[in-house]
Image (cartoon, rainbow, N blue to C red):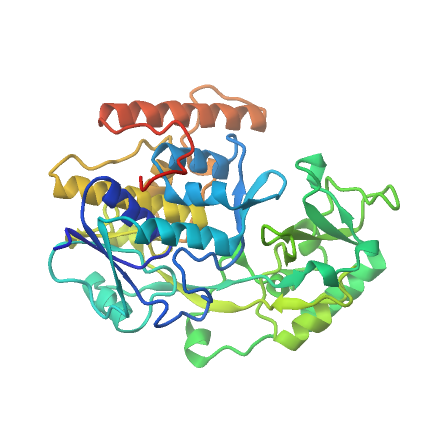
Length: 450
């Protein structure tokens, strides 16, 4: 009989299952795919990446880089999969989506401590330790059961995904390869606008037709700032996207020797480099409008859109009111939550919260002290944020240096300050894990089940 029930085989659920199995705890992992798919999912495998194939920056003195370091230290299966399926993306860690998902699926399926049950879960198990990692698309009977247990309404917002084009349909004579400030091996395709071309594009973008919202969506519609549709952002002003995802800083067009007026960047989508996604172009425009407007981008006049952008409703808990500092339901501490449903925002953030849930579920069963990571670590700071009762207007939060406690001594330079914050976090995490008698992982794990 399983000691822990995990609902959802996304990043958070897979990390939790993997960690529990490595701790010698038997797990039942419930997953509705391939019998049913949410509106945003296409693959039948676990841990599918929906919005983008980027896991963000790698350098340690960045928020995402620090979090990934902490995940590796904690033995993350997501980091194993990413290392095995990376594609070039300058200073970022990007992956081949299908290979990444398949890697994690194989790891989970091959572990003897994990039993997989397929089908839709309609209510939380009445007994045993439970980890809810159903993601931001939780809906139906299960969503209603969670709502009833929580005793208060969800918060809801909408998330958007960017289009993908094929490389062989891009007019390479009009674009150039480069990474900002020369970081990386020219991994991005850059589509340069002059002033006149940009202004025509912006005008068509703000007047393009979006997919109509359903009545229930109109009532709850909220756009999360970190994944805002490009057309919504553009309506804030003619220069908003030119200082956002289309900013030309750090780039020079080799054909002119000058910085373009605006630049659309395309990032490699798969390992073979045959597909590229439009960076920052999450959208809810109708498919025909996407084809019409995005074909105005230099080099994409005849682009083949292998996937158009889509927008879907996401939901998350009012975690500061509902969850304790271990991300357990205050009203029923045997129930943990992990992933985006808690209000952490982003792939690696969701996965990291699953690692912590897995460790703590195992320690709860073994009657050991639960882990509460130091607030000066990135994962500790994120966990503290989503469970902080002082947060009134709760919004999803991704990893960022701003949530870390300040240094004791003021440091003016941002790069130096971030480096010191990261070094402090690394030392703090290792000291804490040593104190809690947890093995510190010092290499990239890519072999075996654990």
